[in-house]
Image (cartoon, rainbow over all chains, first blue to last red; front, side, top):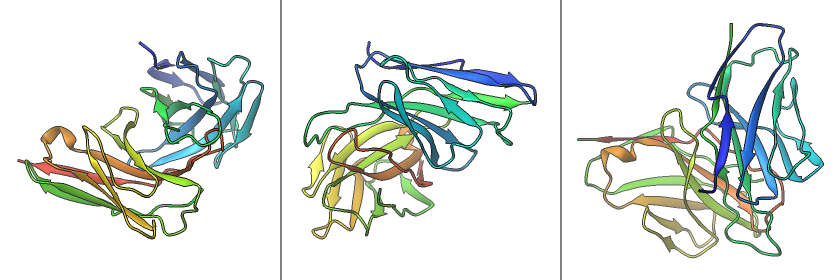
Length: 117
Length: 112
């Protein structure tokens, strides 16, 4: 089945350590996104990529880094510079489409929950 | 991207229609309205989207006002499994047109 796979589902990290969250999709989508969600709050955009080897900062990019070397993969690294990294992280993808596309739907993964000890 | 405003929470009796409003007064002509829902600790799930006409699918109906500044998601016969956070977002028609911003959504609680 086509979809988005995020791993790990749960991750614990010590302060000062970098950690990388994996996001893989087999939907042949061009665009991929990373969101952060804190308890009781909505989704905030960290980074997004519309095409391989290109990505843009979202609203809360500080302390995070990404890469987009392959169409299928968009890993997120939470660096030690991120002051409050404990959160639920969601990856999404969407088709780039051509011209007008009414089906520019975001498909989400199941999420990764990061806890800093 | 245009911002959206939704009530923080709503209750609905099981079996009754749930009507969830969304205000998107700054929506531009090239943006669709999309609705998603998120059940606790899962990824958001797509429900429905529309441009200016009312839309219906197997999950819900979407009513968009003529001026497109607001919309209502209708779950015709709410069940306990519809308890979730519902997000309304606006997104450009042209795919690959950049980021989508989510607000805090509406927490819908369906009660027996």
